[in-house]
Length: 532
Image (cartoon, rainbow, N blue to C red; front, side):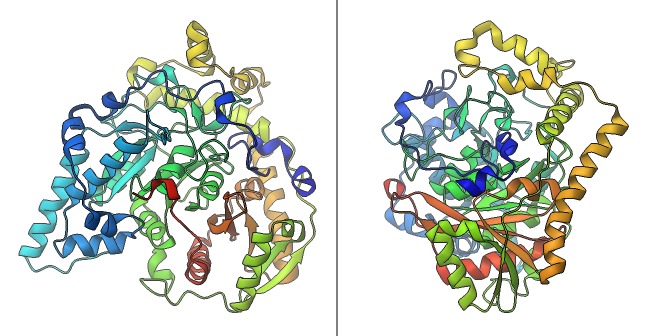
C-alpha cells in the first residue's frame, strides 16, 4: 500500500478509490447497513413486460450463441436467422429476472427496465428484414438491435433518472441525453438503467461502493460477499460481467469507469475528456465528467465508442476491422516500479515485453494535485443546479444540493443510512470567483499534464501501463484517456485490470494496445455462478 498512500489520497472521492487500491474485503456484506432496495420490487421493475419475460424459455443453443459473445458474433448469428433481436432482448431480460434481485445469487445491478425495450427490438428486426429484402450488405460492426444498459445518471425520456437517490424517483425527463440519442439513432435497444454508487459516489463519503438508496447494494458476481464492486459505475460493470446485456454505459469523473470495470473483469474506456457530449447526464464536475462504454471485449468497446459519437473512427484507425493485426511491437511504455508488488502486473508486463514492447521503469513520485476535492465541491455546487434548471423533470426546477439534503432528512433511514457527508462538504465549500476558479482548474490540469509529458519526452514514451484505477486521478486531471482490460484473477478470485493510459486525444492508441494484449492473453472468464 505504500505507493498508493503517496499518490493523491484525496482522490478517493467520486469513485472511492481512484488512486487507491481496492482490496478483497474480509467483511461479510451482511454487516453492511443495507443490501436490498427499500424502493424497488422485482416484479414492478419489469412492468408490462413481466408476463412475457417470465414465460420466455431460452434454449441451450441460444445460450451458446449469446453468452460471452461479441457484437459481431451476435450480429452474424441474427443475420443468419438463428434468432431475432427480440429473442436477444428477452434473453437478457430473463437473466436479469432470474439473477438480479430477491434470490441467493442476486446482484442488485439493475434499477429500471425500459418499457419500450421490446418495441425497439422489434423495430430492429423489421429493419433487418427490409435490408435483406433489398439485398443490402449487412454490417456486423453495429449496435443496431443490441441491448445496452445505461448508468442511472444518464437521462432517458422513458425511465426516471435517479442517480440512485430517492429524491429523484420522479425525475422522468422530457428528453434523452445526447449520447442516448446517438445510440438510438444507430438502432441500439436501451434495455434499462444500471445501479450506481449514489450520486456517482459523491454523496455519503462513508458508504460502500455500489450502494444507492434506490438500487440497494450492488454485489460483485465474482464474490458477492467478499469482493468490492468498484464505483461509481458499479451496476454497469456488474451487469456486463454477469451477461445481463451486450454492454453498458458508465460515467467517470476520476476512476468511476476504470474501477468497476477492473473489479468485474470487463473492458472499460475513459475517453479524453470532451470526446462525448455530457448533455443530459447528472453532473459532478462538467470540467472532468465523461461517459464511456463498458464491455466484455475490446471490439465491442470500439463499436460502442463509434455509436456514442466519437469524432474519430476507432475501428479503422486500428488498421483492421477485427483487431487481429493490432500490435505492441516497438511501443514504449512507462511502468511504475512499485506496482510490481502485484504478480499479475508482473506477468502482464512479461507478456507485453515478449510481444515486442519496450518497458521503461518510472520512479514513484506522483504529482501532488492539492485541491482536487475543492474542484469537485465547487463544480457540483454550480453544475447540479444547472442540471435541475433545464435538463431534469420540471418538478425539480430550483433544486440544488441543499434542497436535496433537506429532502433526505424527512426519512433519513431510507434515504441516507450512511449520511451525506460529501454533500455537506459541497455546502461548506467557500465561494470562489469564476475567474479564480478557472485558473485553479487549468493550473491543476497543467501540472498533471506536465507530470506525464515530462516522462514522455525524457523516455520517448508512447503511453503508460497501470493497474485498475491506481493512476486514474492524474489521468483525469490531465484529460488523458485510459482503458482497462482484464489482467487475470488473484488466488482469492478477485479480478484485476491492466490499464493503458495514452496522451490527450490519442485515444485510438488505446484500442490497438488493449486489443493486442487481450488477443494474446484472453484473461476474462465469466463468473462461474452465472454461467447457466
